[in-house]
Length: 295
Image (cartoon, rainbow, N blue to C red; front, side):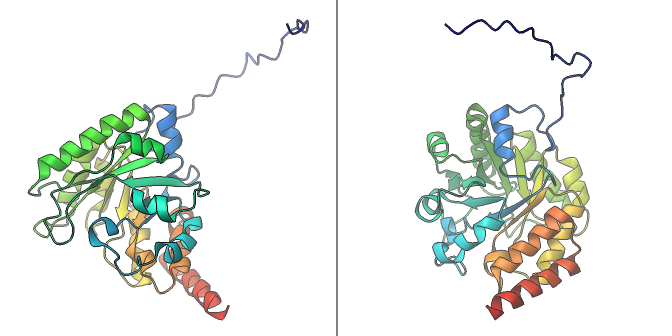
């Protein structure tokens, strides 16, 4: 047995109240420690925002432009991302296990671009998500789509499983060709995802009234980058979204299809985490692009 410690304990600091600081993310105070820790691997605790690098497009598009060789086109970018959104196949085959940022795993799927995309089902097991040490599972939700109920049921099932194992659930609001991309629809879809258990939500930015989308959603919202835009326009999009309440961006095409993806993701980071103006960020992009060309 260890010798008895005969020193008298005295450093109790009875005059200093114990800290009870709220978690930095909207709507997350009630979550368990493990789930909060995983969210802190997605969102930067200093800015409260995230730059998610999305390259899960192959689950329905196959080797689309910019993703023909993930090992050559995406892996050099991951050091600049707070988190990666991808499929388990790409994670296992192409991403170095030394990457320590958050992993957001595409958890729903089924039809390809050749079929009706809203007909998705859960495509992984919770055991698989735990094995891969993911921070969140992403599920597509087709509010107003033909298979709306099934996709919402996918979300609620994943939320139950995620809460049981301390893994976040990302509800991704899909927009079909027949649905209008306006603030009214985004408020509806985002709020439904949050009400039914999503830990955070990915939706689209809209120019008129986006601040009402973020204000009415009780969990963090990140915006989808959407279709490829000129670099200056994509930086303006990111700026407008975070200034109107978004907790970051989930960009894919506007980074990996950029003329200089490494310069672009670094410029996006400045907008999201340091509140750079779009003009400042674009000037940084041009500088980094020029430096890369001169090497």
